[in-house]
Image 1 (cartoon, rainbow, N blue to C red):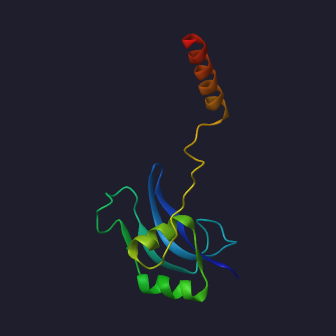
Image 2 (tube, one colour; image 1 turned 60 degrees about the vertical axis):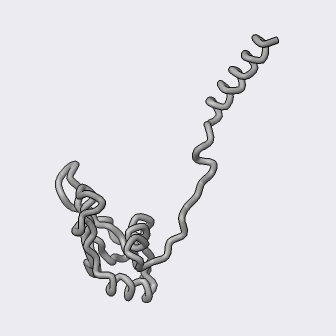
Image 3 (cartoon, rainbow, N blue to C red; image 1 turned 90 degrees about the horizontal axis):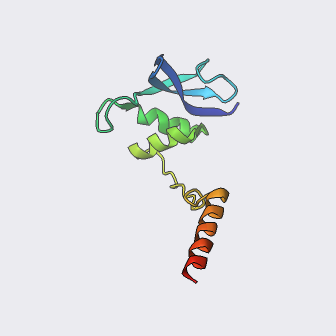
Length: 116
């Protein structure tokens, strides 16, 4: 059984509230879980003390048992110092796409012909 540390959504429409849970990877997002280890409220300010309430000892124990955190939970655990997460870097993401590159090349060519 592969275990995940993930967020289970609660709250009303457009008012999300998440529980940090340990669940079987095959179970639905908001379905059955093994243990609740904390809560996360993204609507609170980032510096609020109760935005993320997490039992770090339980999280570390589940990580030692082999539970895999999702990307978002890994970010939260990294912020608390429980897990070391490698920063992701995608240098291709900031580059213009194909059509924008074609427009830029056409504009450069038009500027070149106008200058000549």
